[in-house]
Length: 276
Image (cartoon, rainbow, N blue to C red; front, side, top):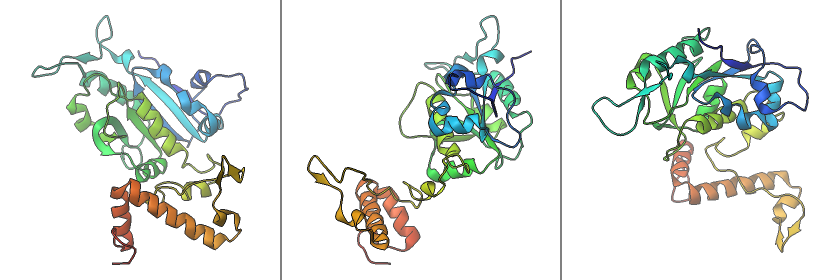
């Protein structure tokens, strides 16, 4: 018999509780968006997800977090979860029978429709994670995340469970736990009521395919640098135009790939200001 996955739903909670205490909660709130994480390090969760607005939303049951400890499904006296790569080579590979057993437990009671409940492996060879992906995940019932270790995961698991591979960028981490927390955070903040001001998610980087415009606040002058006059004018239409122009300029300068895609959607010439 294996240990039940740790979970978090609605709690009666005091300020003295630590993020780790949140994982000892009862079963998740019915209907709450849920992230299930298959990991060798369940103690890494909730981590930063237990802080700030995501942590508050976790307390209030707006979303739920469960971990499935991969080690409990390991083989032999030492609960081995990996073995040498077929065909030779350096490193170790996560075993399909071990991961399959963990996924079977994680998927119990969840929809088989991958649109409603995606299963994602955090992998440097996956498709790049974007704001659109975060939005798609936030609109599902939940998500199961596989945190890789060692040289990777047996390919047969990806095929058998229709696993989607996602990458946070062109770099390699020692494991998928940090990437999993980043992915969960980006999706959870899009769940209604989590941020408290849903308008803020509509006017931030990538929401319209552009980087966000520069932000300023008091004091009006700091170390000889003043807030642009337009932002203090009170003319909301002109402020909106300025912000849009700055967002476009920054995107064109810093992310030519995003700028080309934006221009294509809006029928604009990426090398000029005129419409195509």
